[in-house]
Image (cartoon, rainbow, N blue to C red; front, side, top):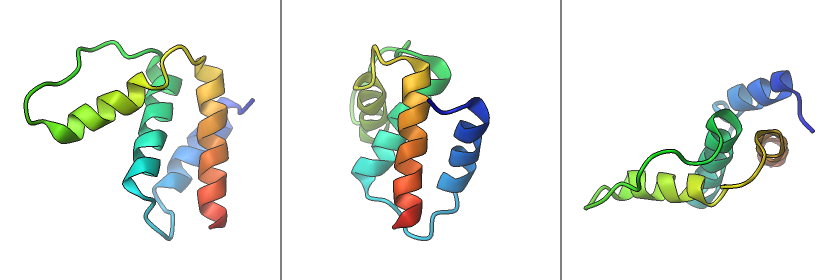
Length: 85
């Protein structure tokens, strides 16, 4: 499992990746981040034509039930993979 410090370091490293990840990977990072920091989704799904926020909400919802510690570890692992290229 990743420590809080490792997670925070991965968050900072994710902002400085040399290559921009695909939208799917960005959404996966977002969902893991939200699950790690806030737990299960706690808002209603956006409606209408708010496609960006709908996609973000769906990414977070897909992580539902995952322990924050597990989400932190997966986030760190994914950032490590992206940093290696």
